[in-house]
Image 1 (cartoon, one colour):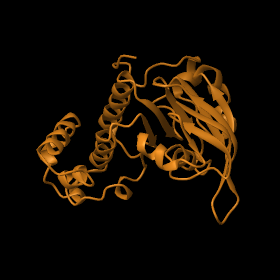
Image 2: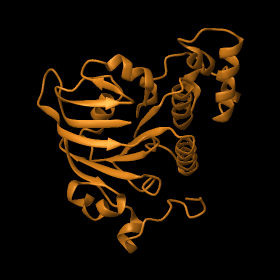
Image 3: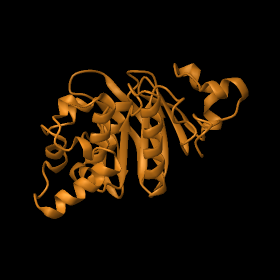
Image 4: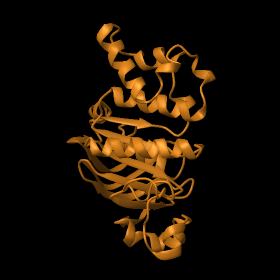
Length: 247
């Protein structure tokens, strides 16, 4: 579903942000992407989403290749950014979910159904600036899933969430996986999602330094400024973030 071949990227002004990154995400898989702040995680997600093209190397997403077909990649991918305020464009929940869609009974009914799934229907007419941080995150995720993407990219989805918010985000990621959606979840903190992933990739200064099953990677993440989950440090076993949740 996603394949990167020695992807290198530099912004127009500045040094390389990513250098020779190669990795694969299988269809329906869930990849954890870790690294300290500034390691290149957000840039890599932007490349996967078709927002940028590699300076060198290539990537393929659902059969669409970049460089050259970034627009096609954008048709099948959705990126939910860390800062929800940069992604919300409508004045109300209703307006944001229907923005850019053909207005009509069918579109409105679909948006309301998705809003109800995410417990947003009670905010349907609310100004977006009155929403909590976690609710804004859910609004962005709702808008992304309304487009029926084949690939969902989540940039630091647990940042700023309280305990109930983290549990809810985990449940949403798990439900997406059960529905067959391919996902990449980035975070500098592994505690909240390590038991959910199929594999873990670690970036350090723009280079892919670790990649594989979490159990084979976690002993080495501290060498790259990433903290291993407490349960792993204590007993070298990955356990659910919340023991009350099913794996």
